[in-house]
Image (spheres, rainbow, N blue to C red):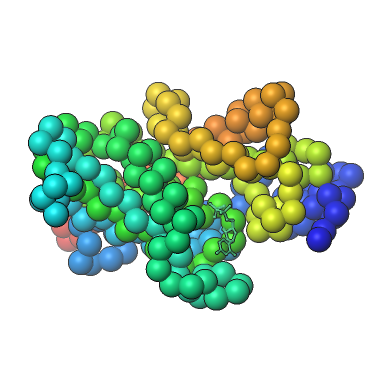
Length: 244
Ligand code: CDP
């Protein structure tokens, strides 16, 4: 097990050279799959995530339908080859939990009242995992929902902050997640600042919690800009093709 001192040095440099307030590198591309209604591929540090959105379409089986609104069904899945020790394929407690919290977060921004009895299916496939996959999946889902043309109040976005070596830092990497003191992933609606998801692993004092929360919020706004650029890029190149 790594000691705290190794995760962040006295000058505030982290294992990968980042300073406490730096995000890992993020790359987002909208509309990468042809058979899905909307899609997104996202790389965030060493995470690689692919999201496909289908719908709104009639929810099946019928007993899951809500006559007043649509349901949002996110399915988070980690590929067997996405982690160091091969992961047993199929759902487990962790993936069921992550699917549930992401579904609930997305339901708060989709205009579900417009689509009674329908389902909006969001398939999140983690191809490479290096800590922060729920944030990566939710952020990619936001872009894929836009790509599918689903009416939204806002584009949801997620980012985590945490604590390593006694310091609050943004966007934990793999070693920081494994050997650090706490992780606080959040998702927000950037337009209103409404919190759509908040989870915490580890221990933080109230002051540390407030600092980590503010830092994660700031991270969300940074990631939100990258999301918007990816969406613009897709539609600007589509518009250029139509003009040609
Ligand atoms: O990925 P996220 O931080 O949202 O969730 P986590 O449960 O805190 O998992 C942290 C990291 O542990 C994942 O991103 C993977 O890199 C790793 N992990 C793993 O190696 N094997 C698993 N079965 C689950 C997670």
